[in-house]
Figure 1 (cartoon, each protein chain N blue to C red):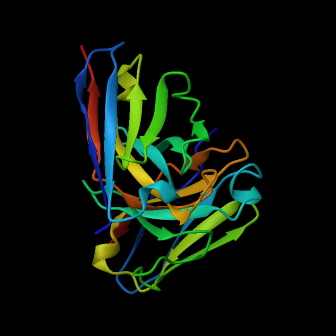
Figure 2 (tube, chains in turn yellow, blue; figure 1 turned 180 degrees about the vertical axis):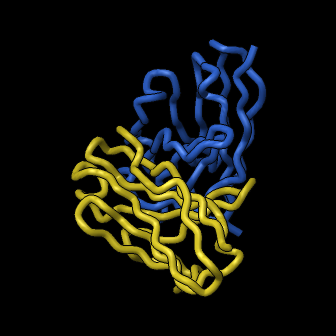
Length: 110
Length: 124
C-alpha cells in the first residue's frame, strides 16, 4: 500500500487560509469516508484534528475543516495562527483492511 | 484522564527481538480497537497494526507482517507489540493509538488518543 500523496510544505501568513491536499486512490481515500487528519508539533505525539472526512473532535478549533472529492481529501485552515505551524498528516482506511498515512506536510506560518 | 503510556523501547541488535507495552487508563480499554504506529527519525507516520477490542481481529502493514505481532490483555488494560527479526529500518519512535469509535471491528476509526511514544533503535 503506497503512502497517500501530500505536498511536502505549505506556508501562509497569519490570518490567511491554506489548504493541504491528500491524494490517494479508489482503494483508500476515494472508497471510504474514513479519512482523518492529524497535527504534530516537533517532539510531540500526533493530535486528531479531523475524522470521517469533515468532522471535528470536541476541542478542535472550527478554523480547521475537511472535505473530499473523488480520490483527494483536503484540510483547510482558516485564520492562520502562529500555533498552527506544525506537520500535518492525512490517513485513510483501505480495501485491504489496513490504514495508510500521507507523507506529511510541513506548515510554515510566515 | 485518558492516557496511553508506552514502554519497552531501547537498543537492540539486528535480528533481535523486543516487546513493547502500552498501558491504558481513563477509559474502558476492552471496548476499543487499538493500533501501533511508528515514525522513523525525521520521517512521516507509518501505520503498523490494528487489533479489535476483543483481540479477535488483527491486521498488519506488509512491512511488518510475519515479524511483528499485536496482542492485548484486557484484564491488564495493556496493548503489546512483539517485534522479531528486527532490522535497522525498524528504528523509530513507536506510538500506540486508541480508535475513536467504540466496538470497532476494523481500522476504520480515527485515532483519538496517542501515547507519548517509545524509541526503538536497531543497531549493532
